[in-house]
Each structure stands twice: as structure tokens, then as C-alpha cells.
Image (tube, rainbow, N blue to C red; front, top):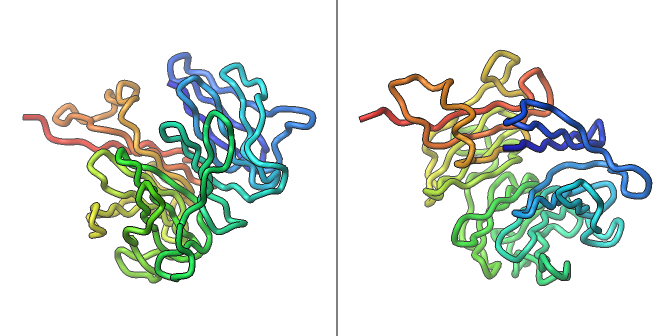
Length: 269
């Protein structure tokens, strides 16, 4: 029931409690102070993993927001996104043009993907955002390559979504990526101010969003999250003729609509 948002300019994490309807801020002091927190993920036990690209580390804080260490030495990498899956931590690292995979318990580096970076079709240029589906496949928004790369659980290349261009199904500045339970792939494009949805096989299904400051518009969108767990907070806004299946949260970098909440709906029988 809590929504966490990285504020790179304010060097803080905003925390919106949807139950208590409160908004708070977290900014650690002293040697653990944020420099450029850009993305985060939360463990089942409440531990927060914050990718700080300027510190070059992923910083860890327990459920009481007490520092419990970091992954990586200072400036060892340039982490821009972090995702937790089973017993591992996945970190998008622009510095090494890879996704670094760490053991969650020991914090030791297990391996990096892609396994083969000699082939330009399979490699990563500037990995900025990642997501993982239920089968353990890794989806990487490669902003520098104008595409999304999908790798298997073992790190082997599987397929590409999108390409460079201005047509439907293409990207100019792709950022956030998310996968739903049907393996549809949601990709934010900050240049076009929209989200495109692809099938598992890479076909463009539809897109939504447009640039603006009006309700529902996007302004330099950066992240997208598919959420099945918090429908109860937003069902009251849905037309009574429809049921809410899941939520799609899109974070914009500018404008009054910092976080837009969209609903995937279906007509009631």
C-alpha cells in the first residue's frame, strides 16, 4: 500500500502511503546521503534497494529506513535500475553496458548479461530500465540501441522489441519497461510521450498517452509499472460497467501529473 518514487533533483525518495493517505520523504544523511537516486525496488521484508547512479552503488535500507549496506564499491558501476527476482538482484549498469546479477544474500556478483556482447544484435549499448517476467526472462530497455532486448534466465539473447525510428512500434528515447502476466511488454518513450504495448512475439498491440499537462497526459515519461495488487485503491474511479483487471503506473519527469495511474479494464458480463 505504499508508493515509492525516486526524486533525482531533490536527492530523496518520496513515500506515499495509500492507506493512511500521507506523503513523506526519505533522505539519508552523512556518508549514506543520496547523490542521484534514479530507480528502486522493495524486497518482501521491506528492504529498499536504491540505484544511485552518481554514487555508483545500489544502496540498501531496511523497513525502518536504516542503512544496511550497499551493493558494489563506490563508482564501481553506474546503476540506473534495480529489480529483485527470487534470490537475485538485477542491476542495469550503463558503465559496463550490461545487467549485473548479484546474489541477494551474499551481495556477490554472479554474472553479467548479455553472455555474448560481440554480436551487435544481441548486445546492450545503454541499458536504462529492466523488468523480469514470471519465467525469469529479463527485459532490458536499451536506450542507446533504441530497442528492448529480451534474454533468457541464463542470460542468452532471445529477441528484440522495436527499432530506431518514428513509426508505430519504433523508439526515439525508450526508457521504462514492464511485463504483465500475459507477457505483454510495455515500453515508455520519453521523446514521443507515450507507452507502447507489444505482444510476447513483438507485435505492436496499441499505444496510449500524449504530451501535455492535462489529466492523463505525459511529460517526459521515464518509468512504467504493471500492478495487480492495489486495485482496491482505484476501483471507485472505474465506470461501473467495467471491471478493473490491473493498474499501469507511469511516472513523468516533469509536469503536474508526476504519476499517472491507468487501468486495464474489461466489460462486465
